[in-house]
Amino acid sequence: MKKIILSAAFLALGTFAMAQQNTSKMQQKDPAQMEQKRQDKMKMMQSELNLSDAQMTKIQALQEKKMAEKRAMAPQVQAERKSKMEAMKANHDQWNNEMKQILTPEQYQKWETSKKDKMQNKRKNMQHHQMMKMPAKN
Image 1: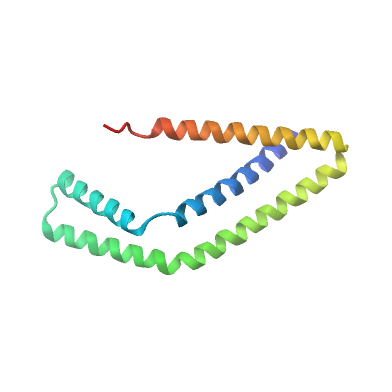
Image 2: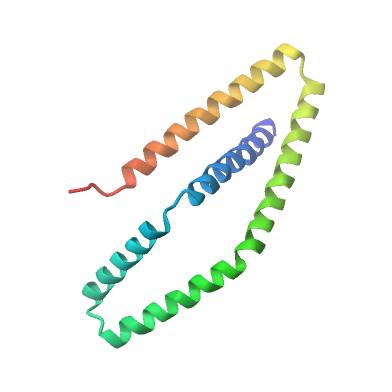
């Protein structure tokens, strides 16, 4: 039972930390660079699928429509994400306060240190896993 509760707490904390990192990365993207990547993907798709110019025009129109819909939904999605993150943080804070009441100060400090170490190891493993999934550049 303790393992399940601790796992849930670590998962909540990890999700919160990863979401914070992802939002900062998303804000740093250069629009010109993103457009260039989109064009490159379109060219690759055209050559791989042997698409006609008419098909390319339709696909580009479809992509523009999808992007416009995403932009329109962005504030709502961001608000939902923010409220979920706040709820997770409140839950995490409540958990920590309850643990503080149960554990002695020394035990609590040791527990906190252990959590931080496990999170760092988990991040390292995730980064390593992501690096291994990346295709090699020629």
